[in-house]
Amino acid sequence: MRRLTKEVRIGNVKIGGGNPIAIQSMTRAPTKDVKSVVEEIKRLELAGCEIVRVAVPDEESVEALKLIKNQISLPLVADIHFNWHFAIRAIELGVDKIRINPGTIKNKEGVKEIVKRAKEKGIPIRVGVNAGSLPKDLAYTSLPQAMVEAALREIQLLEELDFTDIIVSLKAFDIQTTVEAYERLAETRNYPLHIGITEAGPMPEGAIRSAVGLGILLSKGLGDTVRVSLTADAVKEVEVAWEILQSLNLRKRGFVIVSCPMCARCSVPLIKLVQETKEHLAKLTPFPIKIAIMGCEVNGPGEAKEADIGLAFGKTSAVIFIKGNPIKTVSSSEAIPTLLKKIEQLLSSEDFPGKEANGGLV
Image (tube, rainbow, N blue to C red):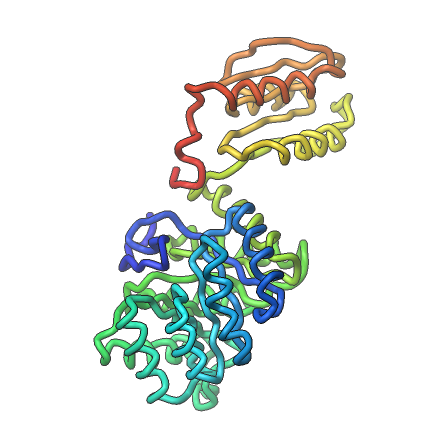
C-alpha cells in the first residue's frame, strides 16, 4: 500500500494524494543554451518524462528560463543553490516549482522571500537535502538523522510562514542511508516525497543501484515522484525509472518483453531475435503490452500464456499465443516476423485494452 500524502500540483502534474508516481529528470546542457535545453527536454518528453528540472547557476541561466518555458509543455523546475535571488527571479519568470537545498541556501530572510513569492504565484517548493551538502553544524549526528534534521529545519520555517505546498527529498549515494532517512522523515510529515539515489553513477551500475534503492522505498509505500540519477544521457534516467515502476506494477507504459535467459535446450539465436524485436518495437507507438519470447518448451508455453501476446519456441517451430490462447504454429524462421505482424494488428484494433491506461496506474 502506498503511503497517502498531501497532494501538490507542479504545473499540470499532481503528485501525492494517491496520484500516479511522476517521473522526473534533469537537463545536461547549460541552461543558458536555450536551443539545446529545449531539444533535450523534448527528447525527455518523448521518453516519458513528466517533470523536468534545470540548474540555475548564473544570471544568464535565470533569464533563459522564460525562453525555455515558452517552448516546452512539461512542468519546469528551477534548481537553486547558494543565491536566493535567483529563485525570486525564476518565480517571476514563470517556473512551476523551486528546489532549494538547506545546505547551500542558508539565508533565512532569503528563504522567507522565496516562500512569499512562491505563495503569491501558487507554486510549490522542494526541500531537497543531499548527504553531500548538509549544514555544517549537523555533522555531529548520524547521517540519516542529520539529513532529516536539515529537512525539518527548512520545513518548519516554511510552515511558520503558512506555506505547505512542500515536496521533500533526502538523497545519498548509500542506499541504506537514503532509505533510513526517508523512513524517519515519513514518521513526522505527510508531504509528498521525491525519491532517488543521488550520484548513482554510470550505466549499468547506476541503474542497478537506483533500482535497488528505489525498489526498497517503493515497496515500503514511500515515494510520489522519482528521479534516477545517472552519469549518462538524461533519456536513460527516464527509461530506467519507467522500468523500475513497471517492475513493481506501479505504472504502465510501453512494451514489456518477457524472455528467457537461454540454455542448451534453446535451438534458436534468442538474444539476436529479442534484440531485433526491441528495435522493431522502438519504431511503434508505445502501449502497455506484455510480450513473451521464450526459447524452449519448459517454461515457454506457460509464460507465453501469461502475456498479452507471445511465442514459445520448440526444436523447429514456435507457437504464437494471444491472451493465453494458442492461435498459430509457425516455423522457427517465421516466428518473429509473425509475432511482430500480430503485435501491429493488436495495436491497431479498436478494442485493444490498455491504450487509455498508457502511463497511468495499474
